[in-house]
Length: 242
Length: 185
Image 1 (cartoon, one colour):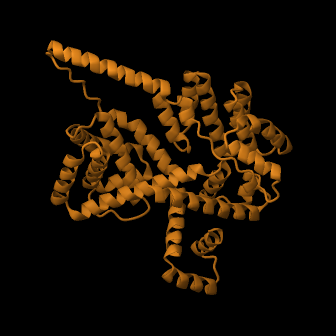
Image 2 (image 1 turned 135 degrees about the vertical axis):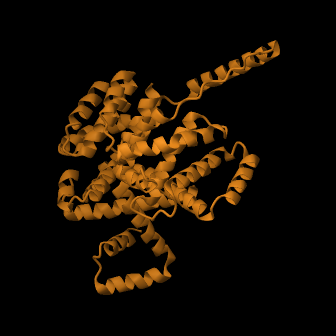
Image 3 (image 1 turned 180 degrees about the vertical axis):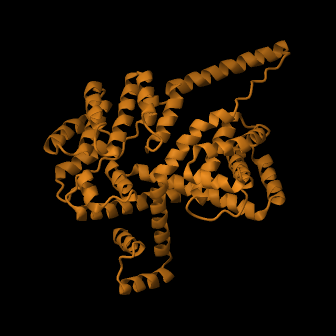
């Protein structure tokens, strides 16, 4: 798929020679799979160009909606026979048990929102070592205890790699070493790359959430602007924190 | 505000004008949802998702054949029927058939096209978020028009050629993830 991606990319950017272009168009006319792949690649590019704005629009709509939709008042029956009251009592008890069970068995708010991106250090470097590939696998398998010291070594060797630090922060957070996690995410908030700074703010909010400090989590989430790729998740989480 | 301006407002993310869309249609859609076994919260979610479906289909893409309000209402209905179909199959199928009989065919085709575009965008979004942070950042920078040299510097890559290689690896990985998920759904 990789070679095809490159040719399609060149075709879309008008970088194929006249001969290559003619050959590609001939192939396109008879190869449905290639035509589908071209359409998908165009969709992907359109998605990327609209992504930030779409996410901002979702944020705007989430904020605006409650002003225009009112919650309907509950309708309570005025007369209830004793049988009805019994039935209502039993139903309420069942409901209470169902909710209690859901509360006990539902994953915590933190684990619902802490979906970490995949670690990909090999992707970055043409000369990635075997140990880097192992580190990737350990982190991506969720074994944060083992990944932590390896990432400490990695970040010491690559001090300019903000991504590496971000993943180290995630390991600290998963290992409940909140002070260290906060220190790393706090420093990354000042990173020149807006995307890294965004990740850092989101993870600072998750750190506060995991520590049980909902007020601090809310404050941090408010800092995530509508242009951020986390704005929708942040909006959802703020709602759930109420 | 003219109906033709609503689409423009939505595509431009103009808060003041989008508020006009809510003022014009929110109450009508809320009444309809409440009379079809839904709550105000359902109506609010439905309204928002339907606006996003219109954004996905028509902003920077296909021309809109129909009046904004009629299309918005039709998308809301289709979405709501989809949601309650599982619970209340027979009566919903009957309502869909009634609707099909009463509504304009082009309008239904447009509404379905917007909904399927929205589903596609959701799969693209989901699979994009499954990419590594590095890939996400690279593709983000790329869509903002950063040069390969700038990207190499920001991403800690060796040079512009490494950016080029990474980009194709990321796109290929994204395509694989997309194809797998689209087949499942």
